[in-house]
Image 1 (cartoon, helix red, strand yellow):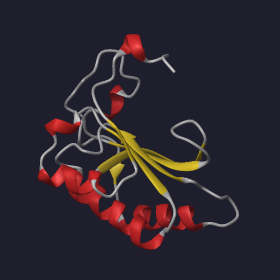
Image 2: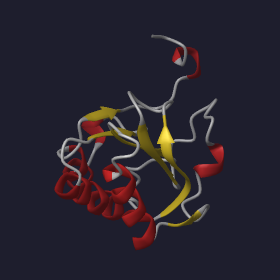
Image 3: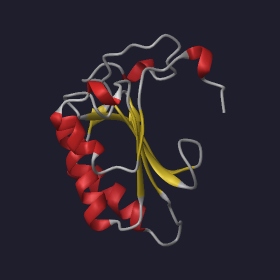
Image 4: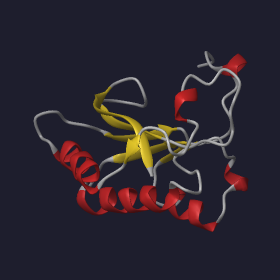
Length: 139
């Protein structure tokens, strides 16, 4: 898996103060997408064990209390991303008790395969469906 950006402290992409990871790879190509640079799976940089460890450390850092992590992109549930996203989510569940996990995906819940559902079963909030430009400012 590749990723484009990691924010160790973010107050924009979900509730509270959190970490946010923008992964590479998206097949949806939604009109008006603000992250077109993340569509290609080979764009960005490799998601390494060191980056995974950094996320875990940041979530457990007591100097800045983080509510959880937001996984966006690209699409965290792109089939090529699912193995690494599942591993990350499993580690967060095991090593970061009480942290919530939000995932944004262009897939609808009823379109997900068994591997993608393994991720969904471990998260708190799934924001599903393609980005729709006309709806972006609705509350």
